[in-house]
Image 1 (cartoon, rainbow, N blue to C red):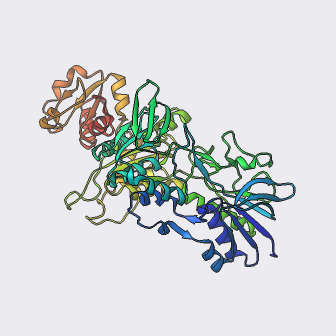
Image 2: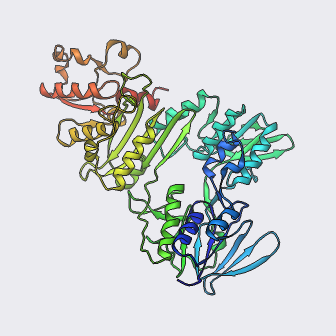
Image 3: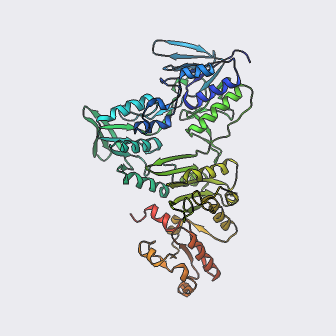
Length: 541
C-alpha cells in the first residue's frame, strides 16, 4: 500500500482504535496521533471513580501510553500537541506543542477531537481528561462542601463518588429532572436514591452566576438567593471541540459537530471523522443526532481504518444505549423517551411493568421498573428504559439487540433467554413485554397510561386488596378486589355505558379484571404500570 501518511487528530476511543486497526491492516503506513492532552488513550468513563478513590492510582486509567503504542504498533504519538488549524487544500495541519508551532503534512486525515465541557460563568473545574481528574481529586482534600453543576451521567457519577469521600454534596440541575434521557417516573427512583444517600438535589436550578473568592464559591440563583460551596465541579453538557476547523472547508452542522457519511467520510476528500464530535444517524428516527458514547466511538474508528485500507465498511448509526449506577441502583435506556417520541411521531404505545430481577422464590430478588415504547401499527420499538438493583443491563442490552436487528415488540415474546432461579424468571421481563403487546395486538386488552387515564376522566377501578387500597390509591377510584369482582359485578352496573380504567399494583390483576369486565359487557382498559407507576410519578406530592 506504500508509505502513505495518516494523521489522526485526537486519541482516546476513536483515534486510538483507528490507529491500532490501521496498523493491523497496513504494516507500512506512517501513522501519527496528535493528542492535545498529556495522555493518548485513557478510560475517561472511569475518572469519576478515581475522584472517589474506588480507583486508587491514576495510572490505572491509562489504557495505552505513547511508548506502548510505538513498541507494539510503531505509531508516532505526540501528546501535548494541539492542532490549531487544518489546510485541506495543501493537506497540512498546524500543530502547537509546548515548544513551538509547526506544520505536518498528511495523505489522509482522521479527526477525532472529541468534546469539551460547556464553560459557564467563571472558569470552573471540569472533568475531561486524566489531568483534570488528578487536579480535582487533590483539590478536594480540604473541601467539606462540593457543588456539582449538571445532572447528566458525569455529574451524577461525580456526586456519588464525592459522597463516598465524605463530602457534603449539592447537585444543581437546570431541568426539572436529572438524566433527561429518562422519563420522570423512571428517573424518580434514581433521584430518591441520591437524596437518601445524602445528596442535596436542586432541580429546576436557575443559576445566575458563580463567583469565586479565597474561601470558595458563591452560587447565585435568578431569584436572588445564594449558597456557598468550598468547591465546584462543572458537568453541564458538552460542546464539540471543532473550533480549529474554521475555514477548513470541512462541513459542520449548526452546533459545530462534524458532518460525515455512512463511511465516516467528511465532505472533503481524504478527511474522515469519528467520535463525540461527529453528527451520526439516530437509528430510531433516521435523522442526524449527537450521541457521544464510547462504544460507538470505538466502532467508528475501526470503520475508518477499514475504509482507509479498501475494506468497505459502514456505520449505520446509533441507538444511544446507555446505563448509569447511582448508589446501588442502575438506570438505563435505549432509543427515544416519551417526550422525544411525541415530538417526532405524535403518539406511541407504552407498556410499563414492574417484574422481579429473578424468580421471586429464590432469595435476593428485587424489583425492576420498565417501560417500552412502540408503534401500534408497524410494531417498531422506539425505545425502552429500566431502573433497578440488578438485571437492568441485561434487559436493556436485550432490547437494544432486538432494535439493532430491526425486530419488533412482538419478537420479544419469542426470545429464549438463559433461565435459572438465581438469574431470571422463566418468563423474562422482555418476554412479558412481548406477551402484553401481543394481547394488545389481538384485541384481548386495551392499555392506557397513567397520564391518559387521569386526563380522560373515566371511571377508575382499583382491584387490589383492601389493605393495599388503604395505603394509597388513585383519587376518586372505586374499589373492588379482583377476587371479588365476579360476585360484586352488579355494583358497577351504573357504569355500563362508560369506560372503566382498571388498575392494580403492577398490571397483572388489572389484566384479569379487564377480561372479566369485558365478558360481562363492560368497556375496560388496563392502566399500564398501575399504581406503582402512579406512585413513582409523585402526582400527589
